[in-house]
Length: 294
Image (cartoon, rainbow, N blue to C red; front, side, top):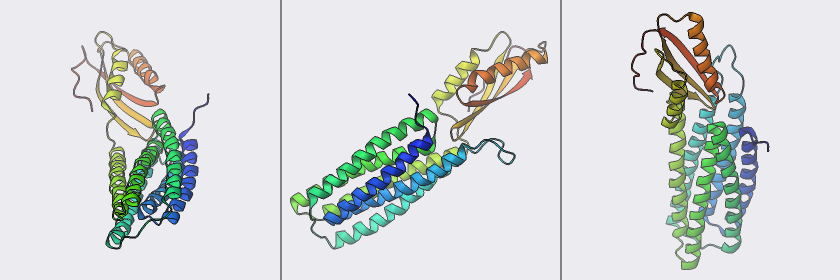
């Protein structure tokens, strides 16, 4: 079975965003709930975020060129940061709308139809979010994973909105409606902060996760032999592409061809995992102790 690419998954996210905007807008129009309005605004963010992510994923997959010899993979981090900024802007608008409704509460109408539309939108987001998260992990696409996480946040906040609006309708406590909207704003701000901090880490060449570094060290250790050691492993990521640098210490009596052959074997051993490894050969006896991996 052919797997879905990040590009295809993000097109699916765009379609889901259009569908959920229509459903949530209908929920707001039918009920007059500011909480449903805030949920609809978040779907507008989903559309803008998925559209920008599509553009960045396409650009990130372009091959290296003279101006970008290490490729364009970091473009995906801009997508995640852009979506985080959109979230912050939407949260500000929700705070204003909810504050006004707290000061001037209004009764809600047609809650049954509005809730049904909101539930349908949430189910669409749940399905698409799971696809995006799976594709993001499989292809190491931050843009797809960030969009999936945002949609999962949307699912949980919609659930909170439905509970808040339902309680407002059942109890007559109309202040619960804007309170649910404030819950949406705080929740999406939290997710926006996570997206921005992860983007900054990528742009600052943060190291791989510890488990990936350990797997890399095990692969290199399997190639070691008497008097040979791989040391000073350093890692970084650029979107879906991962880079690593390591020193190869070999005995003084090794020929250049023999050392280069082992370096090439190490590069080939990790290339299947999408890792671009650079090996620096250094002559030395016995192999020095490994310093702390970064």
